[in-house]
Image 1 (cartoon, rainbow over the protein chains, first blue to last red):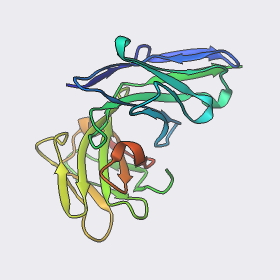
Image 2 (spheres, one colour):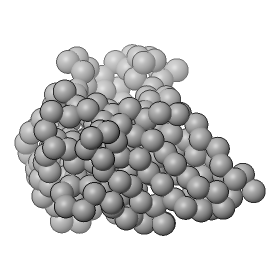
Image 3 (tube, chains in turn brown, purple):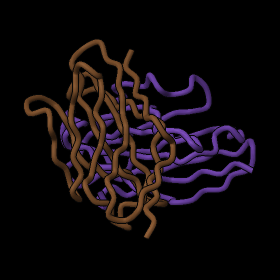
Length: 113
Length: 115
């Protein structure tokens, strides 16, 4: 069965600092991997996704993530945090392009000035 | 994702009442997914529907919960005889094809509070 583990329910960084949000997955077949962002009282917005091909994926708002099969990881990074990045971030996995999404429990990112 | 409309945004129900949550997918989208987000948890899949058909309801509780997506009108998630444990945010996502993961758009959710 698929699962997603997000290490750290809360992450705090200073504005301008590196953002690193961790995600590890479990899947019996090559996975499809996603990062979503949720702003307060809003729905989810897709940041980026990995399906096949290049393992370093670039998304919106300067975020990127790297699929590492050997580590079963898909960590999200951004070189320089901005105040507007404060939100909750969810990692998700599915086993096919048509399957439902399995979400992690989320990581709340705080950015301090 | 503003194109997926969910209403109401907030819903308060007393225990034992019925809750009806509506989701109007984006124009041209005929596939709808419902997810539930409990406090301090991630989203959990509930049901996947196409027009007039339930495709996958493996995440739906066996009792009190039902969903439909009629030929005309929004998709409805119905919860009968609500209990406090039903308090959560319910999100709908839509896509034009079954390729949910590449083209799904989420609504802003309905926050259900059972008192």
